[in-house]
Image 1 (spheres, one colour):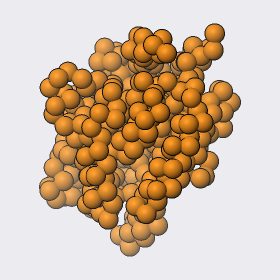
Image 2 (cartoon, rainbow, N blue to C red):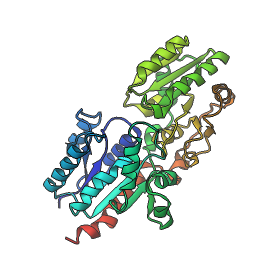
Image 3 (cartoon, rainbow, N blue to C red):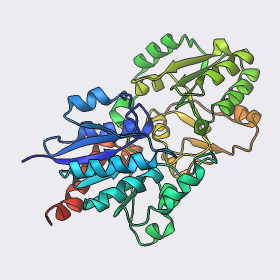
Image 4 (cartoon, rainbow, N blue to C red):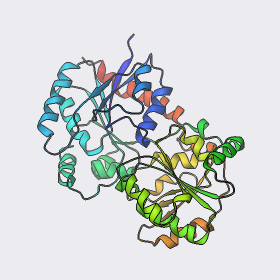
Length: 374
């Protein structure tokens, strides 16, 4: 028998939290049974594209979804679903823009249409009215409603979906084995950082407004004012990176901040950190915060992030209205003793092996009865 092919709809398969989570599930699927294909919305190849194709996945490229481009995009969607009648399950991860993909999937008669919310807010920008419109037309274009947290579900779908018990909260699980602590790995990583005995504060995230890097640097500067024996490790890339590099130099922090770019070895890098700092403006339930807890790290995060993300009791939430000085004092007063959280996370449903098994079962038990009605 041919595997059930699931069309995963994303922006681009780079090393973000959502994309890494999807790859964790994909790797652990029986691909003779379930095969993922991907609809992406960027012309450039993503970091995971080679691996996807090596595992038998097909990648389809669509135009970016943006104001002024809607007519072209909608026409391309119509052409795609007309040409690809083989898909009976579409799982869309592009938040409010899922409404457009799933509307066309519905028109094409695709029976199982999953909208998956990964955010809990939007920033005011030029695209904001278009995003509000996309949320408004969501309606019943999906017929399955997934979210990484209850807050993320309410934000995209409204309370009605939750109240009628239609919301499926799918945990942002991670590969717990990869994050198991190893003192030898820690020493090697810290040697690469040239950390010595310094307190190593880590952050993983794209350099964009959401991740709030400018305030993160303010926090670190206040830490540095109190303790010069510190190092900040930043993993990621993005359009704001040049401005953040400039700010680091202006504050005289160049020798105390390491920019590592995009990395494929996040579990290994976290071995060398002492504390994880995450002052995002908004999130759904961030995968990287689960990863940091899986690594046994103490975490400092903004209170704009859902409290559901504290899975181990190791996350301290602080308001973004609080001054950077207060954040710095909390960091320096915090114990950096590491903890083995693997069993705690496994029991809470955050082991990607178990979640991949659940997801495969969901595709079959929830979607297969619909597939047979052809």
